[in-house]
Length: 508
Image 1 (cartoon, rainbow, N blue to C red):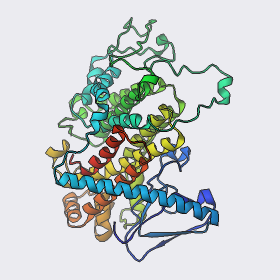
Image 2 (cartoon, one colour):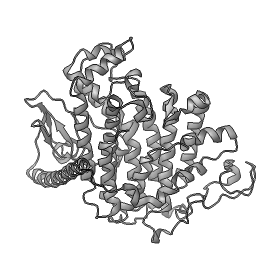
Image 3 (spheres, rainbow, N blue to C red):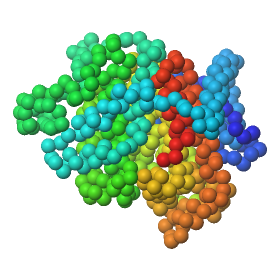
Image 4 (cartoon, rainbow, N blue to C red):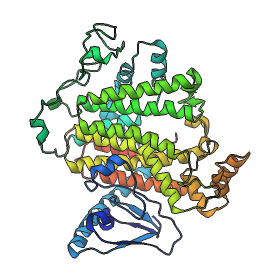
């Protein structure tokens, strides 16, 4: 990295934990504080994970945070400083290893050497994924059935469920959490956690939710039909004989449902015309039916989530849905104040990264965390899984925003240059804006005048905005890999590492 980059760990920075005072001073460089909120393992409270917020630059709490152009000085006790140096050394070593892994992978790609295939470690589970997702979406109403399943017909990346399955298998080998029985469990009958993931909690006649895609004794909503134990997946192994549990497989399907629902809603909001190389759902069925189909997906995802019978996992994934909406609201503005004549500032980049976490990284990070929880992993593993997902999710969206400037519509499978047409200022433009202040006027009016979008695009391509976006994405990839450095060696762990590297190298 450049001479103006400096790494610090959260133990050095978190004033809330150690009670010290923090002074943030700029170094000699004019570079901004680009790297916000990369978390390490076992060092954040669960409340912060659920809130899904990246801390502002004057309240830095994330482990392994990458700061650019900032020096942080902190008054701490001698004991704390010693502990900090140990933690910093361990994290720095992990990040250094991750950097070498990424560099070696890039070199392999240049030599056309074959890399690890992440799919190989979970091929059996992925083979049945979309079929089982479609069965979850069955509806007795033919039009709703078609609309709800529409985006499952085209070939997609299915990155999110793949990551969940890899994380489930990789954390299977990690230390387990002690099995503690909460006090309230002694006061009420325990929830049947051992029940199948398709078994309802409420009486079926009360639910009145007929799904023709699964076997049921009656198609009538008010009848006493029994809920099937399984769909038509391969036989589900008992927990003791499988390193990916039925609940973790179902979690992978739930993440795909939530993601697909967000695509249905996004395409209506953005007036999209294509998705995955085919007409978008709003174009095929109309806005109203596309919105209702997205709502239906979220409803079925919520039912499947409840049947996992794990309160913390329900809380995590329910928060994801709220995060998606919050992120969409943040995207209505390019800056926090939505000024007509904005001036570039650090806060603008922070606002963008917070929005990116909510819209993209929240689902990946919280589903990784949920996978580790369902597998009974210890707290350090759960935190590491979350950190991997958060850093990977941020890197994924940064690359996505970069490709919007560098790839064609045919290559992407969706309209290219759509962000500017929608009035959105993403990372490449934000980096360019720092050196080209004239972009402020265009940002302020959301590229709304004729020629604004093309002018902004030309300015971005004439600067190093693309390169800086790629460098920031690479840093997040390295920190994602560093987060799982302590996981035992396995094919699934190698797959997670390769997923991070593929995120950086992807072209669509």
